[in-house]
Length: 255
Image (cartoon, rainbow, N blue to C red; front, side, top):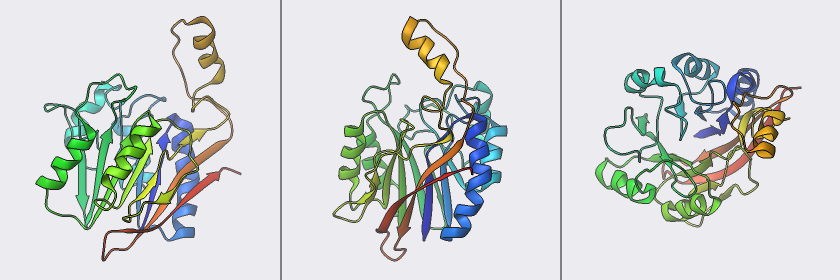
């Protein structure tokens, strides 16, 4: 099985990059399953039912999120209705939505980190321990770990090595050059990167971001314009064992 994991989709440019580039990637690599992080899909912050529909229509089977999942309040009822749209599993009990989706022997888990993150979430390490103990075994388990610190992402990768198929980091929007197979067969990358306008500051208009840094004053941010790029990794999975056989980075630009 070949599973493509796409980094944070930022605003309309990110959704456009997905629409234009994903069909070609799916055909070229014979992709079986696409998972995309959509927490920045609506104007750069949050996700709505309409923007989720765009991502599904472009070819994603499951959408993961992160700390911006609550930014668009109108999405809250939809989170309870659409099982393919996930929020981090380790939010405290009572948060709407779910952090796990399973179909056809593949389990997708959404987690969020705690280091340098403003949200107070439960321990992601213990949340995964509980999930793996409580839920029936699943041949293939993919984890999107939405976290700021590279060290926390890498630590979770080692913690889950041999227990899940893949751990991929999201949130920082900057693709890392470290896709690898850990010793016990878990595929890992520190950050997938993003889909959106790359003449930007992590997807946002550079001048608006510079105003914030130079003045320390608040200013609304909006997605940048310009050339589009999609960052992802492809994980090749042995369906018999649930172990990853290979992980490779696939980045594409709109020509």
